[in-house]
Length: 313
Image (cartoon, rainbow, N blue to C red; front, side, top):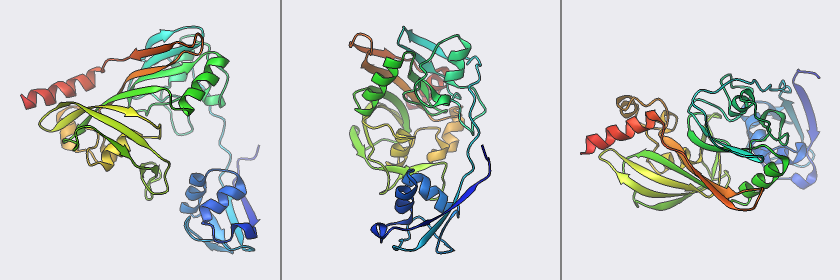
């Protein structure tokens, strides 16, 4: 297989007259609008020979020239033990783990650290072969900097059943987050679409062109400088809690990517966002019964919480 980039020149059909460049490309090439926007932002798209951005409009009969990225090399799963990964539940269909911070859910081209899938392979677990080769059995993910509960499918029926539950939003995903300041109201819902950040392709943001995203939160405990929240996700966008809380002007403590105070993070000796997946509930694909699992805070989050509690005494 060639690893060189490919340039494709495409005539714009009359039916796409007036469409934005990213929307037209997505329809013509069959990939996501986000990917089309990324190519335009990188200067890889030209309209009738002139470089264009994602929001410019096309006309029927014009020509779009696109420099396609080179095919990525296959990502290999490396069986490597994961320190601190706890097996919460294990049966013939699935395994529930509590993921430590600093571990990715599965391999990816830009990640060189340990992964949940690699850790399970090292421990001798047989995982479902459904899904992309590098993420077999993975039905949902947690950020590298977020700890807590994940479920991985072992059987093919479990993979299909769990994926359907996530699509239909019947899975209960609960998180605890320590956020800066005091949300007003103390309990509420943030309903704001999330998409790629317009200026930083490695971040996400609330944007009118994003996908629908809904986060519910309730106050657990208030401190002088922060608030501990119980958070329930209705949708599951990348970085959803972090983006929504930052947009709400209450970023997760320690989340420097999304505007948290570095001075507070340093004082709490916190090197990542204070965010933990504490509860996971779903219908078991084997017997159809509702099952629920919980995970305690890891040491770094406990220490930070105890410190802000003592400061408020």
